[in-house]
Image (tube, rainbow, N blue to C red; front, top):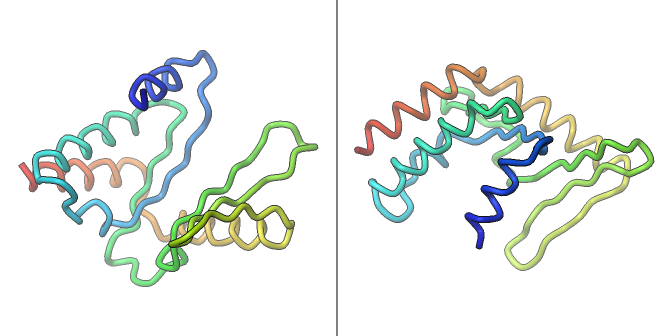
Length: 135
């Protein structure tokens, strides 16, 4: 069902825009098996070429960055009357932050992550190299 939903989402006429920034450590930590990881990384490279997807990697060389405190998602809505929301998970629950100050803080953290991350093409090359190393 998850794959069917994913495929339906990807085939929408006007798919949602996704800008993801991942830490290099996430790409190198083997979960499952090396073969499974390589396949997933190849899929990331393929999907990163979709016009509505932006994927960047924060390399080890970037050092400490705002993402080391935990992952978060900033949900922006096209209708200006809708408030942007930050979604983050904790060990025991999920949080939805809607206060302007909170959303602003997370937007600033996202901007710092974008600045620390590799551009799209070098990110894609790094992911492909990590996948190749796992094969």
